[in-house]
Length: 223
Image (cartoon, rainbow, N blue to C red; front, side):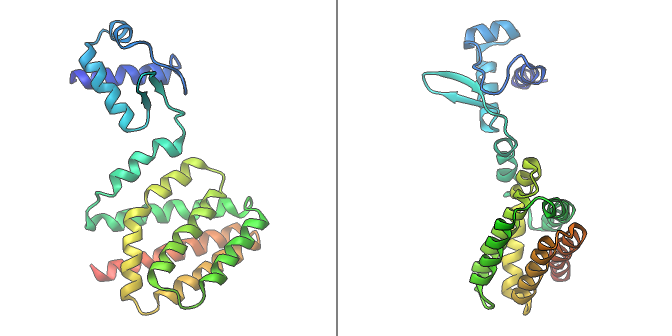
């Protein structure tokens, strides 16, 4: 194991074991290096790496702290990484979305407040029947983000938000090239919203699956 990797594992061990918790300040560099049996250089590199993935927060002149370890914060790194995907992996990202998002939509069915449903309907009404592709995709992202947030599961919400980059580009391309993409998307949104209003969680799950699968099916036909 590389020295820096060993340092990362030791700091991780302190956090996982509870020796360091969210918001805790790490001991001084010299003290921590001695405690862990590491060189100060390897410890410094480990801290830098862990700060990049939002595990640690280095505050100039104040010290190094464990972050809140909130799922949304930690999964920011995933969002950054997936933006480097190859075009031939978009179908794989869509498949993951097809597995996760219908489950989140079903969970939202019993939780989403009436006021939120009213706002989602107002958003759809404001979009009209002939929005531009850019307007549609932006509204599509917001529509699903708000429904997933209503699931009450912050990890699921963060995972799906992190997957939005690759699948967004696929949705834009579909909107530009498939004749009925706009009308179909609007129809499917109405069906999802109707199922949520009826508190029919299985119908909400089914329409969410249909909605994502239609993008997936179109993309397969273009490859």
